[in-house]
Length: 213
Image (cartoon, rainbow, N blue to C red):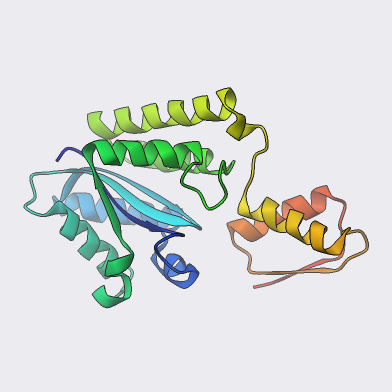
C-alpha cells in the first residue's frame, strides 16, 4: 500500500457530522504535525471543505495505517466510533488516485462541476507542502491531480457553466421568487458557503441582507 485515503463527504455523512469532523486551516496544520510525529504516516495532506473531510497519506510501515488514521480523526474531534465509523470511505493506491482526480475535477462534488473545489485542493496541498508534510508520492499525486482538474475544467463542457452550492441556492431562490429585487434576505451562518451566497447576492445588487450566526 503506497497511498491511502480516509474520508467522508456529503454522500456518507450528515451536515452535522461533517461540521464536527471538519478541520480549519490551523487545525489541519496541527493535526498534520501530530499524526506525522506519531510515525503513522510519512506524508499527509488534509483536505477539508463544507462537504468533505479527507486525509491523503503515505504509510510509514505501520501495521494498520487505515485504522490508525480513523482513530486519530475520532480522537482529535472527540467522537465515539459509533458516531462516525460507518461514514468513512477508504481508498488505496489506484483507487486513491482515481478518487483525487474525480475530486479535483468536480466530478465527486454535491454540485457536478463545482467551481471552488480545484482551488480548495490546491490550497490543501500548498499548506501541507509548506509544512514539509509531503514528499515524492503526494507531491506527484497532487500535482497531477491539479493538472487533471484544470484540464477537465478548460477542455470539457463541465467548466462552461461553473456551479456551486451557494450559486445553486441563489438561482433556486430566483426561480421560486421570480426576482430577488427588493427582497429582504436572511443568511443563517457565517461560514464559507454563506460568504459565497453573500457575494452572489451582492453581485445581483441586493442591499437588504442580514446575517445571523
